[in-house]
Image 1 (tube, rainbow, N blue to C red):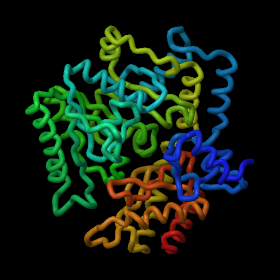
Image 2 (cartoon, helix red, strand yellow; image 1 turned 90 degrees about the vertical axis):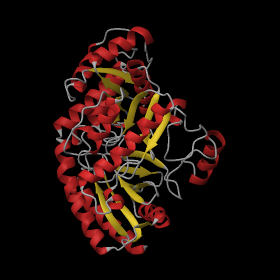
Image 3 (cartoon, helix red, strand yellow; image 1 turned 30 degrees about the vertical axis):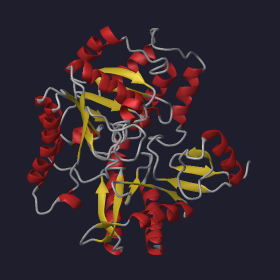
Image 4 (cartoon, rainbow, N blue to C red; image 1 turned 180 degrees about the vertical axis):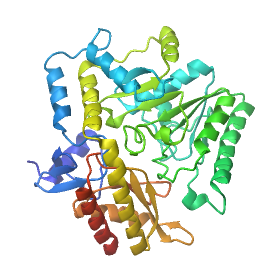
Length: 427
């Protein structure tokens, strides 16, 4: 096994010196199982970050399904294959009846770009509204819509960015309804700005859990009001479910179901194949059929039989191991533990999240809620040194991001909470 320093040097030569790595001392991982990953020295780490292996690292049922199908046939979707069809039927059955058709891709980036193409085709518009701290992928079209970190592509003239409500910072005496109205008005302003520039609205593209934005407490009615404004202007609602989907919240299979609004298009990615490159777009059959007539969309690897087998196996595990229920019960257990840490450590200003997706807003002073950005960065490295992997998100990079595989149980939660308590004390 190569020493980490030598491997890092070789990596930088062939992958570039700016290819991102987690942690000040990168973790050299060699295997994983369930919620655990193991480094080159044989040390185990509790993975409280990765939603890609959503049913656990190297889940045997998923591994077996991939291997079995790979040993029989792997081909693209221009041929008939029963597994591909059965998977599409089973997946779309988890959505509202209007979302009854699937187009498979290989990544969330591809899904979001395809969704934008479909929205523009259906509406005849070009205008796109996103949040002012978002990320939806790496292709040119979606990269230029990125607002949560710098990109070389300029933010386009056809797009507008809007703030989303974070009650912890934005409440200022407002009720939920007033907060929803206040921020929905920002969407109306964006629509008006596009129209004033002669740009017809095509889509509102958001993640209704607002994960990159910092996982704020959801404001009842906000998403529905925002979507209504966009639809009245002739646009569609594209919901990015890459992070929120597949039961992570515990209370619903999909994040948008917590907001009481049905999207026109849903985009899927990371956790769909438990690490196998599988993603997709879910929308109405009439839109898929109409778009297909003129676009002849085809993805060589999207939805191949091996990918479909992986996706089917993920659904098997979600159902068979009752992982939505686990997300709900274990998530509530973690949330209660995080609230206790908030009471104990002054730096914790706010606990946020739903199910197995939770965070801590770190602040210098709860009165002015000034973000503790440097401390947050230090804390994730203290946690790494103590054998627990987490990350950070939010406008000020001061919110601990915890999003473990969905087989995360109370015994793992106890390790997380005790380690986090120790690390917070060390700050």
